[in-house]
Amino acid sequence: MSDESPIDVFLGGGDPAASAGHEQHPPRLGFFTDTSICIGCKACEVACKEWNGVPEDGLNWTGFSHDNSERLSGDTWRHVAFIEQRAPLGGHQPNFQRDGDDGDFRWLMASDVCKHCTHAACLDVCPTGAIFRSEFGTVVIQADVCNGCGYCVPACPYGVLDRRPDDGRVFKCTLCYDRLEVGQEPACAKACPTDSIQFGELDTLRARAGERVQELQEAGVVQARLYGHDPDDGVGGDGAFFLLLDEPEVYGLPPDPVVTTRDLGRMWRQVGIAAGALLAAGVAASLGGDR
Amino acid sequence: MTDPNVADALDVRPDPSDEQSGSYYGLPIINPPVWEELEIAGYLFLGGLAGASSILAAGADLTRRPRLAKPTRLCATAASTLSFVALIKDLGRPARFVNMLRVLKPTSPMSVGTWILSAYAPLNFVASASAISRRAPEIGRAAGIGAGLLGSAVASYTGALIADTAVPAWHEGHRELPFLFVASAAAAAGGFGLAAAPVSENAPAARMALLGAAGELLVEQLLERRLGPIAETLHTGVAGRRLRAAKLLSAAGLAATALGARRSRVTSALTGTGLVAASALTRFGIFAAGMESARDPRYTVALQRARRDASS
Image 1 (cartoon, one colour):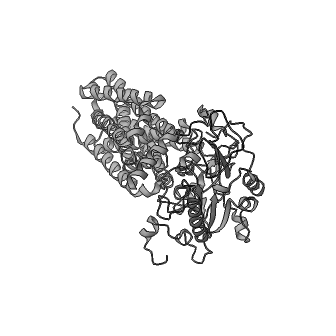
Image 2 (cartoon, one colour):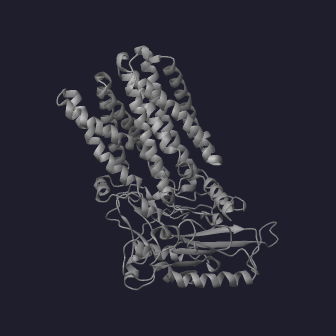
Image 3 (cartoon, helix red, strand yellow):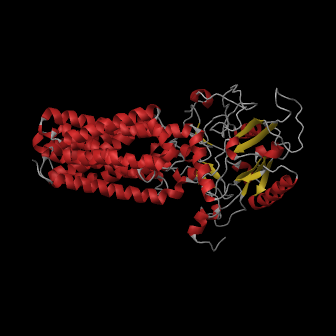
């Protein structure tokens, strides 16, 4: 890792904590969320709110299966998605039938969270420096610095960050930074009764996830796939990655996210040329006569 | 957009039986911008108007056209002041605006833009004060030239500002947006000059308006081609109406200017007003198109699926 050139660090996975200037740092920590064993209990949502003091996020009846929190936002740092499908799930026996279903029914559940990207667009675009990279390789917002400009909100390719209504600042998952600092695992992982949410060193989690997806494939769950585990993807790999049982978009996840700042060099070049063109137009317009 | 019940806000009906919809209950994949349209689309317009007006003013001042230089300097000062007000008002915590000035981050167009604007706005004040008081013309001229040079950056960086997001219609247009915005800025400043300066001195404004309006029409075509299926957001709904109106006004302004509308005080005022309105409609149209492309998950999914399939 240490002999990588800066450009390799940008293009590949790299070591985000070292790139951010943490010379002596602990191993990178993250989540592996294995959605195949999620039971939709929402203990992670509750534990997160309790530990982090996250306000109520709207008591809505959405009609979206058992999902009433809808999406990640300033007030929802863990979000459990529920998807009802007319599709078989391995040897799974549904306990009920709907009209005309022929018993083919599966219920996908998945606990979504901030991905703590290797190349984090929110961190890149934050104009105040409120968002920083921790020594654990995670991405954290300093609430006492954030001025609520909202730039990180549409910069995030996963739709994680949002302004908290009536507060004005942006909030998101910190991977329980306060707990990590004292050697505790994040609240959601601690509360998860099935270990669908696994916390640990990212390298260990990636290896474990590789074994798990192979196990599922061999058991006939051919749609099982990892999401966000690849250090060569558009965000350099996620610090929080997933095992999914269907296409990412079915869970509300982008199929091929790319950090927007990957194209920023070209954007600045275009800005420079455009500015030059405007100045040239101004000179040309001024030099002509008055007739 | 802070309404937690996004589904209601977007009038999306859940259809759990539709397994082919390719999205999660039709909810957005990315979180749409929380920026208020009036403040931020308004800023995109005002920043462009200010920046290009400063260039027109500096040119007019250097070529001894005081009756074009003065109104365009005042316009740049007013527009840049309003820009600051709009940007600060749109913050979730306006009192913390100064936190923008604790770092300078090249990876954040908003950070770079704030620093540019912070240097640019005071120069406009100096140039305007000199023009109004008729004192220290050399200092006024130097400040005006500085404002003109920085004005080119103020008018162009906003293209990168909105393109440096995951909003499909903005990000995919990152090559064209800076050019569309400087063209729109030139049309607005030229239009203002036509409306505000006497016939004897408005020739530079007419030339800038011609270049701007022609550029605006041309670059928008390039943008539509670049966006492919996402260009739908430029043609439909509120964005479509605004951008069609903008194109009509730009084309009319272009034709009128080319046919010599600047030779009469009345026709030049009408033409100029139309061009300023066209520029504003372009900015509000692009803003609305981006919002729509962020709200509808189909754009994010279709774009990324195509990219993934092309690379695998």
